[in-house]
Length: 371
Image (cartoon, rainbow, N blue to C red; front, side, top):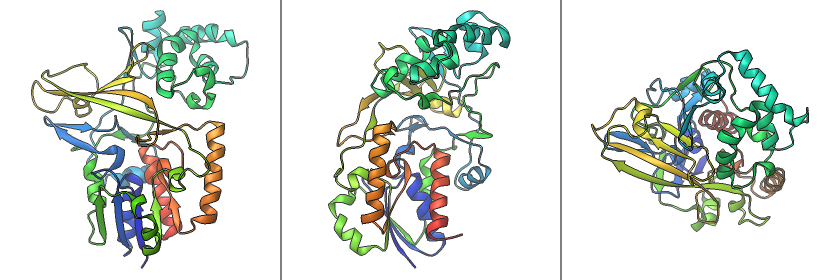
């Protein structure tokens, strides 16, 4: 039996804890926040499951992961169909025939493609070298200017000309009248919220959980006490930023309870102009098809911000400079932290969707513990 310490009670740590306990290992989970479930934490307000750290829609084409997560919750049939608000003009996302018709008046896919081809000819066949050029190569100049440029620059805090092209290489563009943002086979939101999933994962006699606990307050003690540590925090923080700080983007959330039944008519509305300071408004009750107290709703505005120490890091900035620094930290970890496994979005410094988090955790379980 191995004695495990898991640092972070998010989806990665909880998945590992659940599997380790199933195999008879003793697990302790500590969490810096005062609650479990990490960024997928949901809480009921006015009969509505409120996503406390931004919208989370579970989607995957991995049937193994879909079946796995359905052990812990029943999922509804929610389909992610965000809309864009550009100075009061409303457009469908992802970019599809509804978008092209509203913008250009085109009706057929052939007409839409011809318009895109006409506009992207400004690049003269050049291979895109930055996000701006990549966006224009995919959807032309009009959509780039109205629906990509302002939103993206707010999100990342820098010019699209200074962002790598790969960020939107897989931007959904459809020549169909389909407002489903994802192409995945499975999609939905757990009935009753996400927190229950992690609660059930951690509900074993072999698992103890402590919230409001900072690993770094007793780091040396933990390293002596436990056989193995699964660390899901920031890898650069683990090493006290000894090689320098990795770059992250953070978010500020403003949540309001309103005495109206329906505020914006959709779960997610992106504000794509540069002048609006927030990137989107989430109306949580629409994730559950309007369920909740009558004439009550809850909305959240999301404001991207530059990360600084003490802020929550949400998104790694995976440009060449940061990825090079991460590799140096990974080499340091391999040399000096042999009993520590770094996992999740922050431990591995990469963006993960929820299904990818579960898949990555199960892969670590297989390597660490076996089938």
